[in-house]
Image (cartoon, rainbow, N blue to C red; front, side, top):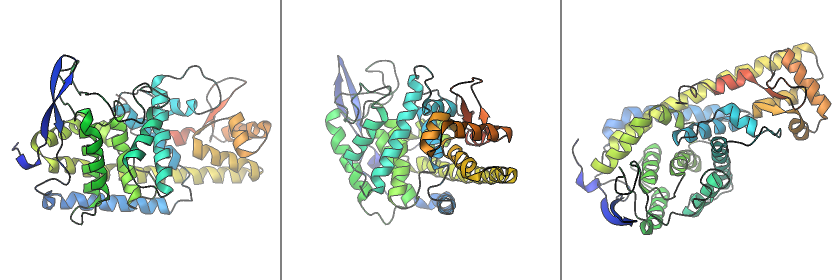
Length: 390
């Protein structure tokens, strides 16, 4: 692969203990010379169309989309898996119930923190706040504030050198910018985000931003997860998507080795076009999967609604419980009763009836503290995550 010298960053020495390491300072965005878009037109058009279909599909859903929160959980789960958290969707949903199930594992709390961070960041953006260094710090504080890494400076840019790959200082495969350059590098990235670049399509800009964030590695931990969140944050802030319904981490997890290799070729060779083609293929794949899964979920919801209506129960109670299962996927009776404003016996009775119809499934086998899952729904959401679990 040919070097593109004007696209390469510079190196600065940084000290870690007794070791001197060469830390990489990425060049400013946009790349110079400019991105060669001619070779990307076909895949860029496909990615634009796929995102347009996803956004159009989202607009056609009820407000808010009933499975929006579950898509956020799927993305958080997959993104956390890339960073090593081995948890399942069921583990996360059980953790979110109000039934004590023992001490949660670090893996589950990591995924839960990722969910909270996505929701927190989206709420701030909906309130009109722009992406900023401070917002990234605040999202990071939520991301790791209560789970693994909570002692690693949540919400604060790192104050020491770090390295990626290798077991000790001096042997790292990649050393990001020294700590005194982290703040300026993030501010420069934020300026790029908010500067109009008519020659850069928004998806190209999103790909550049994610890679640059991972080049900077501004925090001690959680950079990968936060960098992947930036994709949805940026697309939603720019009005390309109305909801964070794109679980791009499925593609990145399934192609993890290539993902890391291409980020490294950007650093070593300035090969932005290879990274962009990979990123755009991921947008097409995950947008189409999100739509296909959403259509299947809608069919399931309608089919089960019709089952309930055909039985002739008191719809005033059965349908709200079914609607809560759509939002949560898995529910415990006390929490469901509080959320719906119904008595626990009423909720329990409705769940037994939904189980008789094959809609809900009791998961514990206990007489008390029962938990019901919307099994068919969770099976659709789990599609692809099993293969990405390794």
